[in-house]
Image 1 (tube, rainbow, N blue to C red):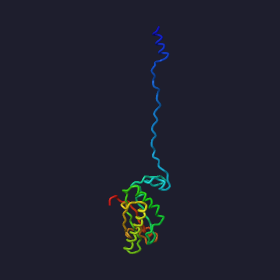
Image 2 (cartoon, rainbow, N blue to C red; image 1 turned 120 degrees about the horizontal axis):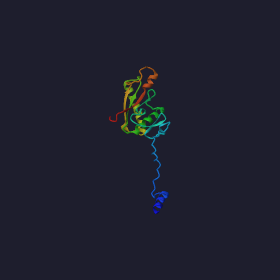
Image 3 (tube, helix red, strand yellow; image 1 turned 90 degrees about the vertical axis):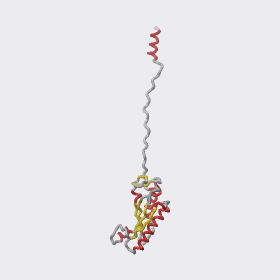
Image 4 (cartoon, one colour; image 1 turned 60 degrees about the vertical axis):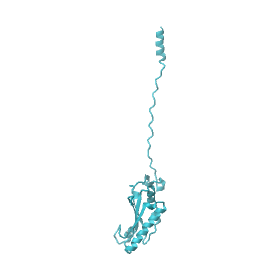
Length: 178
């Protein structure tokens, strides 16, 4: 009878050990999504970014916005127009973001005037751009100037519109070693 009572107790009350309750499925770790900031100007972005198509983009050697710029000048002048400042500020931002990034500033003139005069004017234009970039904090080691005078025209027509196109300083990327 005792045997029946033990068996009945075990069936009625069950064993004393417990089965672990099923655990809830582990929650997956959140995936880090790189957020691209919306912007309208470069200053909306980080120091090493540019605002491109209203999105902050990291500055890199291959970024087209850092690789070439043409700054235009008035006739017989090496003075920078305030209209050119935002474009030069963008180049400066690229240069300051990466100290291995270097540019050559090529001074140019239109066809009017002597070869000597236009070489000197092209050099003054290149130096004007160089000085502006230095004031913004770009290092001298990142800048190189050269003058082509009237020898490197973009346009060969003998019109004011063409001459205006040739009165420029071109800022172009170059290899880090010079």
